Length: 335
Image (cartoon, rainbow, N blue to C red; front, side, top):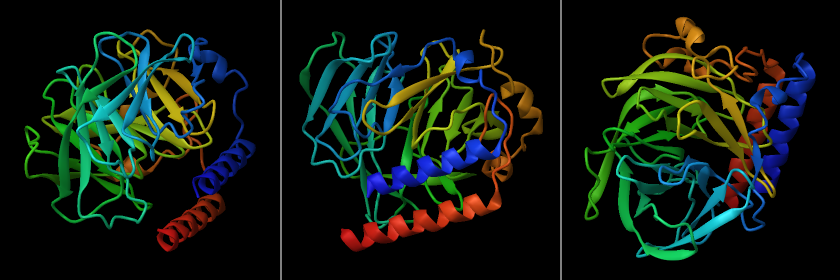
């Protein structure tokens, strides 16, 4: 079923490329700092997080797998450490990963292929290792539920200053941004409460300074000013079209965003951020067009290339929506 969805998204992306005039030099503007994940075990890279302890290394994981994560060196694309988690249960659908200000790695087992029917999901947490080598580490498992009922989600973000954990739910018509308790508790249940409205989200990441939150979807990405723990003005962010747009993270220096996708030998694409020493446009300038509430305009910007908005044909969006619903129906019938 994953392969069907990947085919659908790939076809949609190709149709989009055919429907717009895309500059041939768009990919070259990234400075050649993209990389390909070479580990044959990583076939469904669903989350991406820049290491705090090891510059140039990115954490990733498969969605339906053993309780393990991989450290990938962006210079070579090779896995330099495989960390197996003990002390946690069997993962159901790991969809996101983030590194907190304490240096701990957080893994979100928060996906729900049944469309939001599990009454709880989990977060796993473990200290980022000082030395990169294969290891088994004890992790803390947190039970999570949403105050307004079960949700499907693929985005988990840990704020780099406060350490508070946020989850963005995933729905075709737009989801919600959920805030966890000030500190997660390993006993009992951690209730996440809805604090904002967001578009269809497949991943998200806070900037290293904690002043912006970027959320990506299948065809676009948006940046939101983060003010007082809430979404602020939003703007378009340059994002690549990928076969299945699964993940996003800031580089550790905050100068660029890294976008990942699923599949064997999957590519991670770098996009420079304007005003951060890169060549990108859009970004901060685009924030003047964003809405002050950070929610109403968040559903726009489908297919953002080199910071410029691309109009997606309405028929294409309808076709994609129809097939997505079909995929979801097959999943419900097959589980």
